[in-house]
Length: 262
Image (cartoon, rainbow, N blue to C red; front, top):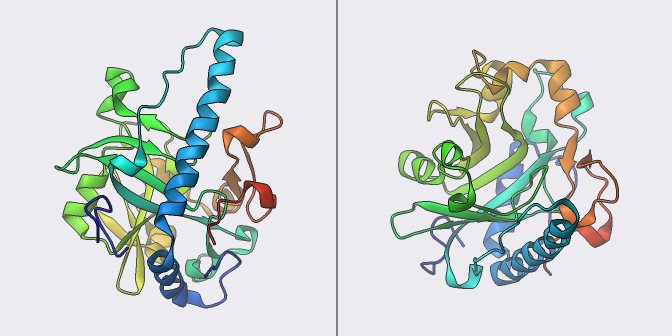
């Protein structure tokens, strides 16, 4: 393993999972066989295309977007595999949530840039409602310590993940000092765990959905109706948006938007 790929071991399953928890084996195999250089190239290219679009907006709206100073090929990076939840309108708490997981073919890999002490300073190709790359130094000081980029070191040191996953729709928050989350999950053995940002704890994914933390936190929205409504969508990359919508129903991405390496 090269130093630049800091954690985890380092073919295609992109449809609805029918293997229950065997999806974990499918994800591991996909990750192990991924052409990481190809995904790095695609992420770097998408980042620069997005910046060009934002730079055009500078002249229209007068908002300055600093150019990215990130070269993924020269950085120590932590790959994060993006997943999504499909057909959630059919989900019930008694179901196995693993049956609804698929790899996100539009985003596939995000990359967190870290220094030798695993301190994060940037993230590239992160699904988000506005902009998919972030540099901590470009964030307002008040937000730097609360940035959802600062949890990788915590996650790695505490839980020793085999593979880090992320679902963007499980990121965000709703009011209250604890109402912030980053959407990170991870694999250990044959289980997927949801890493909860504000308490540093982990919950097996079925446990998280059925009875995860729900006090003064993002998880207040995890009632069944909101799960079905909220997790049925995924983010559209900024460079592909044709109107004001920033997301669409999962499983309906056009082929030209998919970031799949051979």
